[in-house]
Length: 129
Image (tube, rainbow, N blue to C red):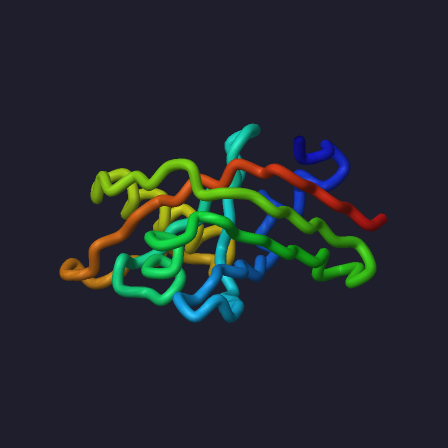
């Protein structure tokens, strides 16, 4: 569903903005690191974060990613979180890899922090070239 012309925005360290819905139905937006497995958009978060709590109640999300070298080229995704992976070994390996992609070095969260990999199934995609 993600056009080949815009997959790079998900794999090359462009910051995404994730919109979730608060319990009072107001929007909440968080900048996030993203990944893509060819079908799902993935992101990794701590279970104590607002976005995680919102998704527990409402799995509908929207994502916006802008090309850092051309702000008029972007990818908009609407979808649902269809899977949450709480395997801590896998989640910590994933966030370490994302740290290299986005930050230039492994990101190592505190040992006491529970991590989760969320998978978003896109239901609507819009691009701009």
